[in-house]
Length: 427
Ligand SMILES: Nc1ncnc2c1ncn2[C@@H]1O[C@H](COP(=O)(O)OP(=O)(O)O)[C@@H](O)[C@H]1O
Ligand SMILES: [Mg+2]
Image (tube, rainbow, N blue to C red):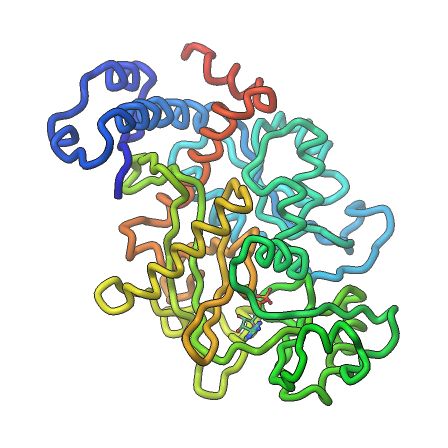
């Protein structure tokens, strides 16, 4: 891996000494990339390590999870959830615990609901980590980033537009198609347009032609395989689509069933920590390439709500035997991340067809970041970290350092108070 390395240091003075020192000999010997470019990144990684360390000890951080609409004072009127709701609070606790381990003096959890703005102001929050799918309503994953944009509180998460696109599978798939990134043929159907009749529906005819199935029918905004159905032929489509429409009251996606193996790969920005040391890569970091192991009779990967993710359900891909598919997954991750201008972590769900060709099923804007537990329950991303020599805390540090880098280098206008925090002298 090319890049530059800087260990988090324990004080600004130590940081200054390190930043001014000449490159360490063992590092200089390891240079294998353009010598004109590398020193710039090395210097930036050094500088960033100091900035992150100082900000972590000075910022008041809120980790935001999904608010519960049934709680008193959460919303004005309870409305519908097209996306299956989940609080994500336990994962928010894992993230907060990791931030504390790496030196954050003030980390608190907050629910994403009507009271969020007041709570952020009352607690003097400088920075938020979004671990929420929203409270209710359409495009709920984009509500928290939209509110934070309005309040001027910088956050780690996708901006409202990108969050909304990624959580609308049909909109995202159209972007993929525009970019020539493979995704299964599909159409959408909405209950307001009358019953679905494949034999007379012009869109169905245009997209599927003589293809008679099997199909997958699923919500356009969903999670964890909930309400995702396998339908063997065209005759079965209408009732299943109707059932999903009745549940979600939203567009329904009908797509070709891909009968091959299933994979995931994660992609995030170029700042990466290994053992607490920051590297700056020259492109996005793609990692945690895993196979989701399907049982013989398992056509749809069983929801983690029904069967927790464990090492048995997920196989980390290893370069010695899986090099070809790892390269393809990394390339898909890199393309999706860069060509759609993404700014923080995503996880691509990918499936092969019977010939082994890979297709992007969806890209998750808020992949599960559950920290592995002693009883073997983990997340798809955490399960793939060991293969690239990273711990859970390394991942959390990578994500926050990358966001600090982005804010300080490209968005100073949106992070004036963080710049002020950085320049406060230690007492
Ligand atoms: N076109 C498809 N072909 C084969 N399997 C699919 C297809 N679409 C979805 N699936 C299965 O359903 C699961 C959930 O679908 P996905 O699009 O990832 O939605 P979500 O994870 O948001 O529920 C996938 O992990 C996969 O097992
Ligand atoms: Mg999925």
